Amino acid sequence: MPSVNIYTNQNRVKSLEKILPELRDYTAQTLSGREKKLASDEISLRVIVPEVAMQKADTEMEIKAYQFQERIDKQDDICLSIQNYVQNKCPGAGSVYVWLVLSQLGHSAKD
Image (cartoon, rainbow, N blue to C red; front, side, top):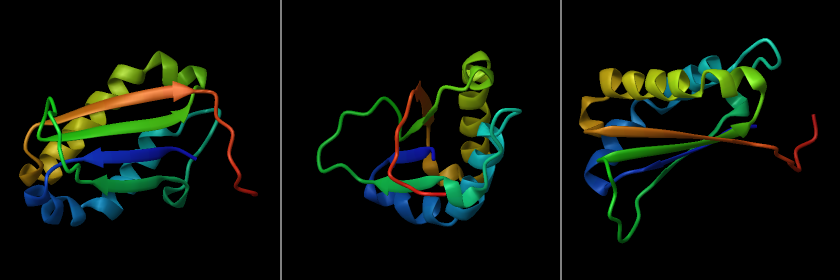
């Protein structure tokens, strides 16, 4: 169950809100592989507006997901693909940086 935190400022929230459902679908497709196929409802996605921030980009995305080998092998491609998607679909997001944090995960959800 990957999670995506999108950090931005209040002026960019409305334009990002418009693409959230499609971004959720795209993120599920991009993170899917031979070992795990994801449905969009398996992606937890939230937009966060920090009270105080010194960000590197106008919009920063931090994606946390399990470390399947296929994801490890193409982690930079995944980040670049999602970055390009957001920049193309939502010019109002401004500059976009994407980080993919891959680790072992436990969760409380029951399938």
